[in-house]
Length: 78
Image 1 (spheres, rainbow, N blue to C red):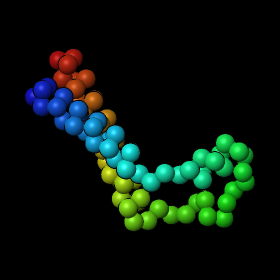
Image 2 (cartoon, rainbow, N blue to C red):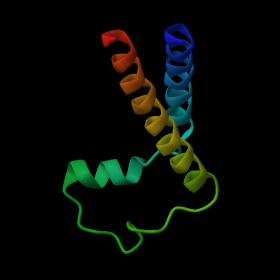
Image 3 (cartoon, rainbow, N blue to C red):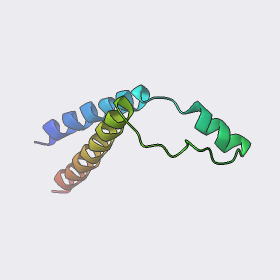
């Protein structure tokens, strides 16, 4: 059981890296944060389409990652 959960954790970890790399860049937001630029009219737009999908996928993968990590800690202590 421990080996199965450990393998799933590794797979989820790789999928998290891929999901984060696939998300659209926010270069303008980063530029505003570094330069101290004021709030844009469109800075708080709702995410749509591919960007919204990738955010949801990333959240699900992160929850799975933490769940598998906690399960592994429990299994290793018993």
